[in-house]
Amino acid sequence: MKGIPDSPDATCVRPVLVSKAQEVLEKTAYHEAGHAVMAHLCGQIVMRVEVCGDAEHSGSVSSLRFRGQPRWAANSCLPSASYEARILCLVAGLAAETIATGRTTWKETDDDLNEAVRLALRIVGSCDRVLAFLELAHDHAVELLRRHWSAVEVVADELLCQGNLAGEDLRRLLAPVLEEDVVDSAAGRVA
Image: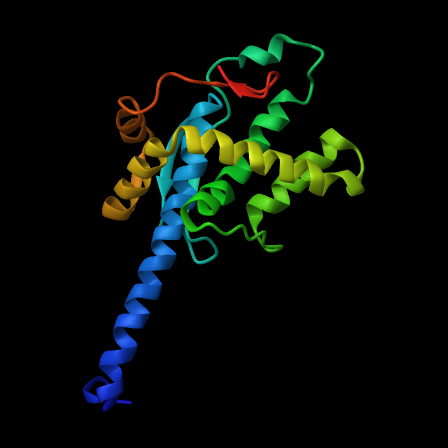
């Protein structure tokens, strides 16, 4: 294989590999930026965002659940509100990919999807209603992220440059592009 770099075909293959790797990295950056922006909108404190994860993951967002008590938590009629906000955060990565690429791909091996299914089952109570519920959550996440797409782009660009962001740096980046919007899960809209 020593001769491959000098091969005329090597120059054709290498740019394709580099562009494919860059495409995967960009998709991951938008995916993780979607999670981070949605977590922020839902009132979570994001501690870290990265695009270079461990051997099993290409990226991750670490967060504490909620700043104080979410506004909707006081409403006893909505015991599922915190689950719904968590599901929005889980599907936001895929929603950001959908906006960035124009394609939606649910992967059965996706940890985000597995957790979203588990939480959705707690809300809807039956397996036959989970998919419809998750599709609605995905559509809602797409709508929210479209409204705040400039925030997703700022975070994705910074992830592509730095590889990771501490929570403090993320909040500093988001401050100029995001109003202090918080998703009001009870009303299903950004307040």
